[in-house]
Amino acid sequence: MRLIVLAAGIAGLVSLLGTPALIKFLRQHGYSQAIRESTDDVQYPAHEGKVGTPSMGGLAIIGGLLFGYFGTHLLFWEPPTSTGLLALYLTVGLGMVGMADDYLKIFKQRSTGIRARTKLLGQAFVAISFAVMAVQFPDEYGQTPASQAISFLRDLGWGLPLGLFVIWIWLLVTATTNGVNLTDGLDGLASGAALVTFVAYLLMTVWQFNNQCAIDPLDPCYTVRDPLDLGVFAAACAGAVFGFLWWNTSPASIFMGDTGSLALGGAIAALAIMTRTELLLLLLGGLFVVITVSVILQVGSFKLTGKRVFRMAPLHHHFELLGWPEILIVVRFWIIHALMVGLGLTIFYAEWVTT
Image (cartoon, rainbow, N blue to C red; front, side, top):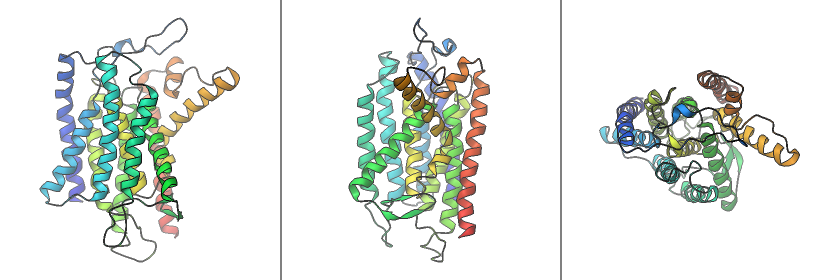
């Protein structure tokens, strides 16, 4: 537990104190994201007040995560595990893809960033390379960081061929990162929801560590590789997001940008894959799923019928156009997300006590 508390503390402190320095640097250089403005054909929510707000705040989150994770291992003189390093690889790698997108938004003032195809190719490279490496590096018990079996509360019992496994991980990572990215449209919405998800994974990894088969082989135990280090990673993620959220709540002093949203999506996906709870992510990432579905429904309905389901997608912008205050939307969406995450944790624990 000392490792977990220290990781969260270091990451939170670095992010909390580092974000203002990043804000100052970005403002001094005029690095702010272009804001979409309404036209005669397309109406966007009134975000004129956000003009000039610096973006690329995800750098503070990544910085806090790295300091929290490696600082904890250094202070306790514990070597990082391959599982933890792979989680960092997926997080930072996707954050770099997002950083390229933010670069165009900020320096070239292109509100749409890089081409969607280019972004997807970058995500695919990181996700596929992660998938291949995640089934390497077996420990003394033969366990690898990830399993080729699809999982819900634990592995479902049948493994996928390597090719299908890679495709599955690619789809899961892409869906998660884009879900967080779509949710990042209001001050604090995505970061607050991600914080709740990381706390849930922190609780789950601690439980898995205390009941792992490597220590206590009695059923029902968990075959998760390096659950304690995954807990350190989840704690560092939670701390980094918590520190950043202080500056990202309404009215936001900084946006996380795609650097942050893709990195957070990668971290959540890594935890889902390596804690063997991939399908449970439908609840633990509940708000991100709802937001993504709203976009799918909007696009599908318009292409099939020429009519829109919502005034605007993603869903939070629909409520903005209905006249809801931004802070009201954010808090209510946080509550909905927390309820879904709570249900996910309940199912996770109920499976243990009924087995």
